[in-house]
Image (cartoon, each protein chain N blue to C red):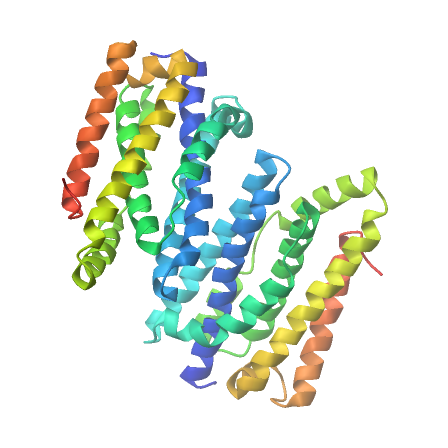
Length: 213
Length: 213
């Protein structure tokens, strides 16, 4: 069983990931081509904030302060978002889908290594219905109108993955506790294996979205 | 009992007020001086989005499309927000408090004039705990450090009220159905009485916040 501090680190990084996802999805929603699609992205933002509240509640139950637990991870997450600011609505939709998928992966990786209550909470915030369908519908509609969009969006998705992995490595380099939580072996080989699993799942999701290699 | 169309107009304007409140609160949260206070304003944004979802559900139950119901009111609400963009964290906090108070007033005015189910829904989204306490704490802390802030914030609150009334009048000038729903008499004298009641309640809330005349 990991030390309490490591679990708080894990909940802290997940919690700030939710707060920053909320913030950036709310911002990106302004690019929507219609009020109906704007509301769909805003709704994702609100769901992320609900996840944050569940994680923050758990952090408080473990005797820590959510803002303090999140603080060490603000820079990495904000760097990720600054380097992946969508310029179009489709980029925003693909980012929401990719970001959500990566979050699900990290949650899954982490859930099995923590005490049952935290694991159950982490699994409970995993299930987000309808996101893949929304992204697929938006991307497919765009591809039908202009098939050349496909290459640009595929490139964009790879860039999102690259920046996410890069920031993950920065965080793990600073936090041995998280390396132990998130990898089987607790060493660099474990980090490499983790990144390989996440890259593989990202590829599967891109294929489902019609943006596969 | 008002016609279905008038109720849908009312739900549409309230729904877009929630969507735009979500959007601008999420934006304003970025000005927060700390992660903890940023999360508090973001949390208000998420609550507003939850209200939107309840109103949209009711619009759908009445056989209308939420985006179509909101469309006629986008310009007025966005004009209000464009003319009242906070430049400081305290302005954002006061705007959140004033905006919430005005929304509560309009909800109360409207709730008694619609069918019981819609009235009950409207009353159920009224109750937001802890907002006044949050605003009071932030404003009082600022006044202790720098009492000269008081005059500027009082002026800001009056401007917020003025712009809100101005946009309300624009909306009512276009929508006779809403004049009938929101006023006792359904005429200009009714509109004047409505604005007087709302101005009075705003004054009471400002006094509670320590920004009274």
